[in-house]
Length: 156
Ligand code: HEC
Image 1 (cartoon, rainbow, N blue to C red):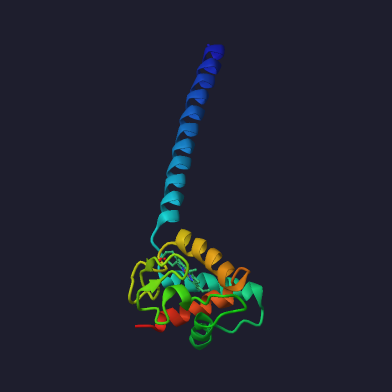
Image 2 (image 1 turned 135 degrees about the vertical axis):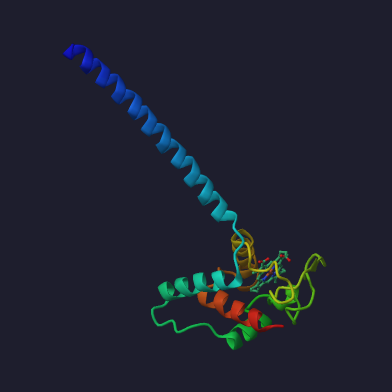
């Protein structure tokens, strides 16, 4: 009888373990879906500004905040190369721009004029990387990104 009970317990434990494993696997699937959904979640310009601010503090312990004035000057001037941001995105970022090389029209960069701007981190990262390289010949610092975004947010 006791042997039978032991076997029964054993079988029970296996079924329980299997059950737990299945729950664990389901949790992993659900967690993955949640993380994937968060990755494509629409963001706001304020989310980007908070991220640039955290990065700027890491890059420079003396960081004191972003300057829209600084961002405005930086946006409009060339930086040792042929183009400024304004060369493609228009001098007034609330206006339609035109690509300096291809002539393609670009929707306004200022979020007030184009609500799609600064809502997708894949786009923002891709284009900061490419555009900063074209204008500066290097990646932008978090300070530069935050300053220019602060400026773009003042443009109505
Ligand atoms: C040679 C042309 C060119 C220059 C110069 C340029 N850009 Fe762009 N930029 C583009 C194009 C093309 C896109 C992608 C098409 C679009 O989104 O309108 C883009 C997209 C972006 C985006 C994506 C925003 C979003 O959320 O959709 C950002 C941010 C950006 N540019 C910032 C800058 C900044 C800052 C500068 C100056 C350092 C700059 N760009 C200079 C051509 C340019």
